[in-house]
Image 1 (cartoon, rainbow, N blue to C red):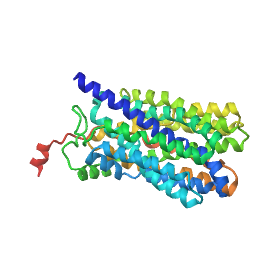
Image 2 (tube, one colour):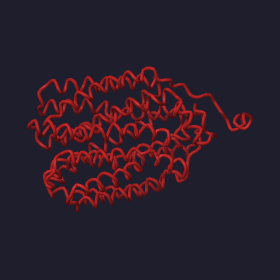
Image 3 (spheres, helix red, strand yellow):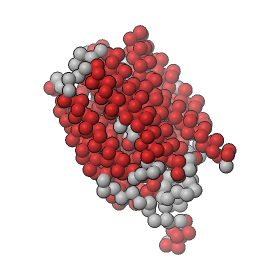
Image 4 (cartoon, rainbow, N blue to C red):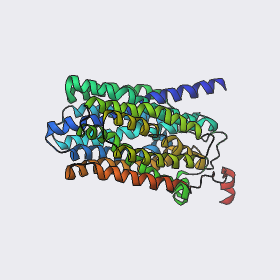
Length: 408
């Protein structure tokens, strides 16, 4: 038992390091919007579309299926190597097509292999049910540690050597993911002892059919769309929005880092609360809270102080949705196919991210203002808060291999 506990702790810790590197690097990409757009002589929509493509591909659920079928280790190793390759290639782009392929397609595939969908599925294999939401919260918070640690470093490197050489430095940094991932489970998991879910012995296709008919799962999928819209729009466009309002570029980087710092506490807090309180009500609170914070931000003049206050507040609510959403899915269906089921919900998140990033650039290029997108973010937060209230989050009835055989 002690060996198992030490192994679980080790895997959670190393998973957190992978997320620090992967998510922290991704959250720094918004810093490249202005310099790349200026050097390539294009509007902000081009860079925004590249990030939007990345977000959409990032959310494709096939990677979760691969991890559930073959195990998470080699999926993450391959993703780390591809991530490094995509960033290195970006140092040599000279036209929008390079952005679309490198920053969009290749980086999107790499991120899907090294992100929460696969990592949380790996953790669910080794962590007891009663500790699952807290563990998910810890690893989600690690993404914010990455945001806090990586973003200022990337901004400093940008200021020193320019964006091309910065991409080379980032490529070397993310290549370490491939080495760390060798510690992850090599085989697909089995259902955790004590899981409330019922799908351990069922074929994946039967589980997917159940999920498609489950109202709670469908509402989680719809609500997570809003989360993606919020975080992608803010992470990509906040530095440029602040610069448009006379705020120094370093404040924009500090604002993103502060979002990450605040989310360390938010993700852990809400993850821990999810082990004791109804996750759906916590999710509603998070989405309503985001709408309130964004409303207050756009009502006040944009200054260094309001930028940092907003970043701290929205950061506390930033990715706290991840442990609660994935935890609710595991609560209903169990952990066996968590990467697949969460991967589908996460795809909805990334469709929202695609629209949040792309519309931000599109609306700005057409109107010279982000105001309509901020208003849309407020309205969507209210809708998401309402959607989570009626979610049915009870575990499905137990169905063992024996009962399936008898029914057949």
